[in-house]
Image (cartoon, rainbow, N blue to C red; front, side, top):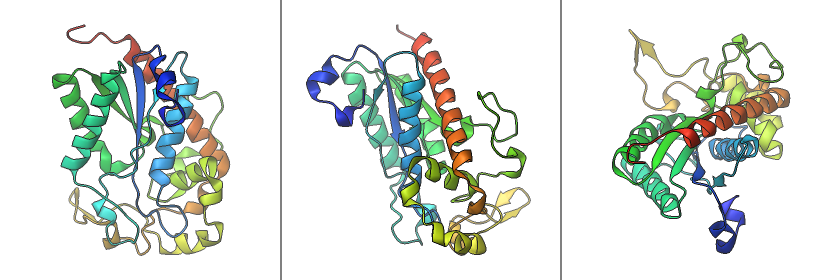
Length: 256
């Protein structure tokens, strides 16, 4: 059940305590990919994971703005502080729990959200009337060449790095919202992209903002991100999410 498409009377008939809450970001992804890339991925994977799960799941609307100040120099990027993000997601989880959907998987599509999501889900579980865990799709999907998916990946994953607006995210956009990808800007994106994230010395990243090391905000060659790779990544992420939903549904919580 997707809350954004349901009436309140339909929502009241949901017979589950499971919910997924997609969270993303509105931020630059190079000159070729939309600002909504992270939110689109989180929303699509949350829906696909709910479909793959053998049971009922409530799918909440996507939180579109996250912790993204590292992209502030690029027009259109929106961001909130970690404190604001944690408070907003926590209260959204609380409102889900108020209707009985008190086992929540927060489906994340943005790297800047990872640390605050882990902290706030722990706080929800320890102090609120709910159990919450974060699921970051690109962490759940193995890029080490070892596949548990029904089909082998369409490319050698050893040659693919996450990057930013690089092959992985470009592939995902091609899979979930191909009309939003600017195909005519892929060469421009590749020419101005950085090879890796940050400026590293002695295990320390000296850079805080992506503009410090990437001319156009991209990291990695987006031309390697095919629609076939995107479909495989989405399917595998959905499988991983469905497995996690099984575990969350079965888990005993303190006080239950």
